[in-house]
Length: 228
Image (cartoon, rainbow, N blue to C red):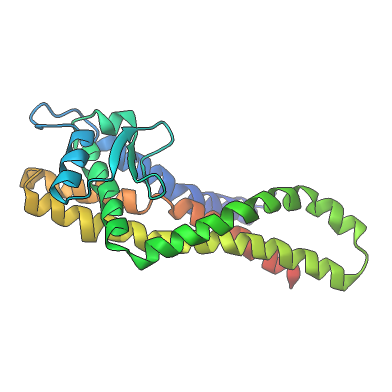
């Protein structure tokens, strides 16, 4: 393997996995327990939902990653963030409540994302079978037109999932900086000295899906290259 190929692979891995490692690093960096905090991330989320009169949304612990589930009207937090007293726990709880606010307000992008997720949940099942059989189909299909059709199907599956990620990014950014940040700043839930760290965590929360989006984009580019 040539030097340029090694460098290219290294850059590719950095592009895909770099944001993911940065997100984990930032959250871990600000996860130190703070005895001076009056409550946990879960308690803050419950308090904010009550203050905002979003009564039908509940808060619970999950092991599947911090998220807001608009179908079940549930803010779900990892144990460290639900029960933790840290800048990361508080900021992430506020971020997920930001999604609940979006849902309560009828945010159009959030609604679009949910519709796309419903479509993607179906197409992903077909995609799993398709990509498993794609090499075999490539050998079996003799007609150039049919082969192009197979490639287009693969591109379509990836494009749907990529579209979900692209819509997700502005939704996440809005939850962090248009919803959670003003709440934390104006509500006085954190000391002013902790706000720079909170902004870092909110940025990390907003960029959680960047790695997945980049991976989907590169996969889409690979299939388009095959088609060309």
